[in-house]
Length: 378
Image (cartoon, rainbow, N blue to C red; front, side):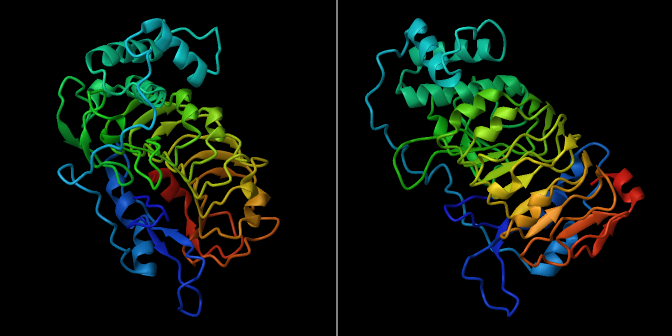
């Protein structure tokens, strides 16, 4: 999956209006035939029972615009501000991070991992590397270091060898599929799976996309401090455990949240501040609780996949107010039957896009999933 400015790639195609003409609003359709069929590598899981229907219904996806190779990547845009005098100053570095990542919480310490290891690395990096010392760079590098240490970075399949200042290749459709190893003396915008490039020259981190790469651990709440810039957070098909931090609901620039095929638990966070969110992909986890009253109607969601979890209650009626919704998958949960909306989404969904369990009939539900299929998993 790949995000361009208009969110177009091999994972998205322009929806076609009923009369066969291109829709002027360029509604986006997320195709899973390619990206999800490869996810059978997860232990005990086979290929998805519904992936093949997408390519059959919509035809081949639009070829993605290739990501530049390392040899063709332009130099990282130099920061507009001068290097900070706090570079290689341990006390000032801690104060900067406390103020900008932890909102000045004086109770926060750097005595425990992953914050401890991330801060130790940052202090060493600013002294030994010394090339990325604007406040913005220091903050972004610290947050990425927290993610690295929180998810077993040294044991990642690719791009985790911080001791090797070399290029690496990682499965990343939105970010640098070919980049540098993490925590090396290279711009954090050019590490494998990240990306900062955009029309402006702010150098702000917009993409964290490290898929199928052996990330094993918990999602760190520190990522929330990237709320001014982060557009894509895609860490699918790893071994992430624990809850999705509720603070992720503050990522108000986020368009894509893709955490499927992990081992995440807990409930879904409030979405009412995520008005730019277009894709929510959380299938094949162990998420629980109700999905009602989370502000679905305040988002821009076009694609929702909550299948193969343990959600309970009823389908949130406000999902029916999402006029741009083109794909909804909620099968294989523990929702109360019958599954139905107070009102159906105003947009007519494709026949195989509304998928329900064997007890349900709602809207244009034309594809059912049996209990046996649910037990088999995606």
